[in-house]
Length: 612
Image (cartoon, rainbow, N blue to C red; front, top):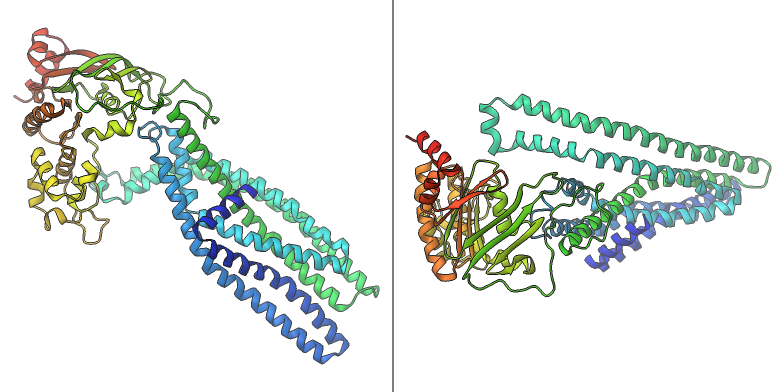
């Protein structure tokens, strides 16, 4: 809790030190107001009993002043610390974004362990502002409890036991918070499944299939099952947490009753006045309120502390994975080693400016995080410079995995990838990513204006209309812009005010143009970006891409990789690689593979017969 308090205050100080100081001073005034109002009420009671009208009037004014302070100081403090809280949420969102995108590869975003951790963080980050508010309110509460304790001791030192009796409540609250946090972690997967079902049911992109396939009841049932699974665990945890909290409050309630009886008996014996009784009753009630307020505040601070620790743990694991030197305990029990996203050597070696030999894979294997078997095993293959390479194979054969390795979205579990003889693992992945261009089947629908949606394929030229138009022309998709109401300036997507929604085919054409933005890459990958097209249309586009491959090959020795599950559309490639069962089954030109009468010839014949 104290670490979380220090972290939150440190972050707030960086955001705006003046607003933080104003909030702290006002909250300190609020903290002092209630106990001092009780003190003036004691004096007022004694003056009334003694018949001192002037003193009663002045003390009554004092009670009114401090009561007004208790109402107003906190209100004005809220204005300052609500602003800081909003900045804190933005700051933590930024750290979460940085953590989720810290690795240039895909290992962390495709690892279910980290997916659960990030899902919890996304929920907790939105409540980070509440954590800061809890720190300020808790600081005020601490000052108030100190003053209350001093005033209680002035009546009878034995009454100091009352604040001490708050300790069991705080301990119980800590145990309750740990129980609830453990339940949230245990139900993270079910919660994600529930949110996924809600997204399916409320997203326009899924509405067609849900209605035509009559899946609404099925989605509703699965959402209910996921929610009930999470709800059962959370309910049991809530019940256990409630028992702990009730036990802590019971201890304090017994002490509260005993304290009041002690003061009343002292007054009856003539050792105290009416004012002492009034002061004790009011202060004891305040202690009760303070304990009740402290429990949720401390729970919120502890929750923020756990969020800080979880964020630090995830960031440390990602950093350790990038350097290849684990520095923290794993997030889950040990398992077979997973591929490391990046292992840097220092200094990193530069990526070649042009290719003269090509890209060679030597005994490359890859096993995804948490998987028991490799998806690719002992792959050896050479992609010659300035050539067009087609990767074909049935669904699930490993084509996309091979592309991920070439794009360096994963580091091989074993083996090496050489670029003109240079081990790719000795280079900075960001530099390699700057020298490749790619279009994927699961392309992103960037809801920017059309110029930017295409232009981000080469970020420095994202606003260059001429470059965007040229890229669309190279992709053969320039016609899509002519159909937009404002051309390249058209705002895309329903999430934007006045945005234009596109058909799936139009989004795909923009994605193909985006893949053509970089004019001189070393590697151009097109991973089934036209899978939604018929075979003839895909064949025409691949012919266009083959001509573009000749251009970039002459400029940089670039390799163009075309991925398709259709064998008939890639026969113009200089090299055809057939992937099957996690390895390279055969490779050669179309004529060579047909003459060999192997798997390629068999599948080519089967697919050709289907189109007759």
